[in-house]
Image (cartoon, rainbow, N blue to C red; front, side, top):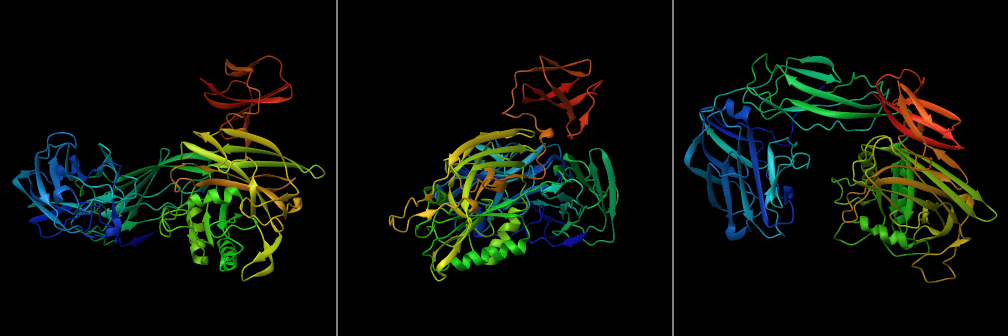
Length: 624
C-alpha cells in the first residue's frame, strides 16, 4: 500500500471558499505540449459532462460563469462558441461567443442568466466549438487519468468520449455559487491489462482521487473476482483534496488460466453514507492469465551501417541493455538508416518506415517489438544510449504476447533446400483487426569492416531477407482466441547473398554459411499508414535444420487447425460426441486442455480431435 501525490490533475476540483466552488475535472496545469486535435475536419471542440448524481449533490446551486483554456488563438475570427446544454446534439440552455486574445490562458464566459441546478437533469454539458485550420491544435488536456463519460471532443462530425485516448481531462471549469463541503472520490483509470501468468503473483494497483472538499481518513476497497468478494479496510489516512491514493492488491487467486473478470469498488469513504455520489467509485476490468509455462520473447531490431562512426558503440550499448534487462530478446540487425553497405537488403530500406515522420533517418538506432514508448519517441525508433534501449525494453515487456509459436525447419545441406513450417496459436483475441506474421533469415559471425572498429569486426544478427518473400509478411484478419494458423514454404538458400544497394561486386558477395543462419518468426499488429500500430505480440527463433516450440503452445486448446481435414461430420448425441465415417482415434478436451471421458458430457464447450486417414480434424463443439 502506498500514498501518492498526483501531479496530474485532480479529476474534480473544488477550489475557494464555501460560497464559490470551481467545478471541473482538471487542475490549472497548462502545457503547450498537451494540445491536440481530433479528426480531419476544421471544426474542433471539447466539453465536460456532469452526471445526474453530481447534479443532485449540487441541487439548488447556481452556475454563473465558466472558464475555458484553448491551445490556439487561430480560430476563425479568433472566436470560440461556448454552450451549456443537457445534450451535445440538442438546443443549448445557454450559449455565447468568446474572443480568444491569447492561447493557453483562461477565457471567462459569464452567463447572461445564471443557471440554477434542479437536480432533476440527467446530465449537463459545458463546452466550446470553433472552426480552425488543420495545421493548428485547438484542443488541450492535462494528461491526467482518463475518466469514462466525463470528457468529450468533437471528431469529424460526432462528439466522442475521450476515455482511453490517454488525454486526461479538458481544461474547462464551472463556477457554482453557495456549494457546501462534501466528500467525494473518483476512481481513476487503472491499467489492469498487463502480462500475467497462471500460478504467479499478480499485483494490481487501483487508484482514486479525492474529488471532494474535505480530507479522506478512511475507506473500504471491495474486490470481486468472478463472484468471490473480499473487502479491505483502510484507516488512519489523511488524503487531502486534490490528492490521489493508490494501493496494491496482491493476494489474488491466479491458479486458473484464461480470462478473469474483476471489479474494484471504493466504498464507505469517511464512514457509511458520507459520500453523496458513488456513481464513479468502481472499476471493472478483465484479466487474462497465460499458461504457467508461457514463453514470450521480445524482438529487438537495430539499424546500423558499416560506415557509421558510432554504430559499433551502439551495438555494445544494445548488448549491455539486453544483459541488464534479463528479458528474452531476439535480435535482428538492419543495415539501413545510415549509408547502405554490403549487407543492405531491399527490405532493410522498407523498414525505415518506422522512423519518425520528420527529421530523416539515423544510426545507430533501435526498436523493441516495434512498440512506441512515448516518453522517448513519437515512433518505435529510439537512439541507442544504454538507458534508452533499456527503458524501451522494459516498456515493451508490459505488453501482452497474445500468441505462441511452434517453428519447424528442415534443411538439406547438400541441396541447401530449407523447409519452414510455422504454427501460431492465439491464446486470446489480438488487439488489432489486422495482424501480420513474417519470418526473417538472419546470420551471425560475418567478418567484415566496421568504421572505428577495424576490418575484422564480427557482424551478428544480420538480416538476410524474408522466408515469405514479402517485407511485411502474411496478413491475417481478426485473430481470435483459440485459433491456430499454419503456414509453410520451401526455399533454397543461395551460396552467397548480395546487397540490393551496394554496387561493388568485388565486395558485395557475403557467403551464406548455413550453420550460422537462423529463422526468426514473429506476429504483430499491422497498419500500412501508421508506424505506431505495428506492435509485435510474440516471436521465436530456430537455427536452420532445428525446431523450437514455445512453452504455452498447447494444441489441445486450439479451436481449428487449417492443415487438418474438416470434412468429417462431428456432432453430439445424448451428451456423447459422435462421428460419421471411419476414424482411428477420437479425443475430447475441456477448454482448460484436460482430456475428458466421451460419455454423459456436462453442458459446456469442448474441443474434439479426430484422426482419420492419417490426418487430424479439430472442432469446437457445444453440449447443450
